[in-house]
Image (tube, rainbow, N blue to C red; front, side):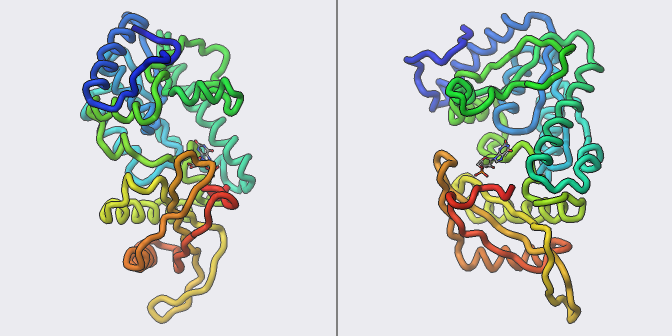
Length: 327
Ligand code: XMP
């Protein structure tokens, strides 16, 4: 049974059994909707698009084409994990586009945060549309719309996050198999579909990716410093049992330098800022207070392992007044 809206009496999917029921229903509904036609999906590696991909692979297999666009602003290991899980393990028809140079060339010298976001969003649509044009006979576009997206768009809070902006000549019928689910339900379904826990329970990550954590004009060296320090932070949070317990944590490398000393020589390098926060609705956030031991360890690792960093700072500011991201 395919639903357009979440039925008022629908039970919250909290168990594997309820998830299995939902998966069975959706496989049936997807096969009915799609028939023997082809479907396209922009697979970011985020929870929602990953669960949609896994559902569609089960329902229609090779009729699905996934496009994973690497905009060069993903976290360390992300594109590799998408390829490993979907192409190697689930045998999906996956097109991987490394568009790093394209994005970073367009972003070169751009300092305005909104302009940066616009360039990233616009270029994403262009790359995706180019790939869609290369394929023949696609009739459906799958999307990871979830129930809060629909409620928020109805309330006028947010534009419905569909492929708004795709060129006119690309006319697709939408396939939105998780649109009646809340986020926690999407995760339970994802787990039942065999997706790895670190993908299903991953922390929120903004669409413009590390681009908003490299404030001002993005340069490749500073972006690498963000990526490497973020990877260390995530590794240490996982080792210390904080993964899945802290809502969101990341590093920012601002565009200024300060003096330091290394091996008896003067350095002039960037600081790395660590932000770790907790929240329920992201309107208000509190700061996760780290242990002295973990702080010392993070400082030591980041300073010694990340080129270009000579200082580590901790951002202990709640929201409000500070937003989660830096731009
Ligand atoms: P702020 O910085 O507004 O962030 O307090 C609140 C939450 O939203 C995420 N965020 C974004 N997500 N595109 C996204 O998909 C964006 O441009 C964007 N900006 C912020 C942020 O990571 C946090 O979880």
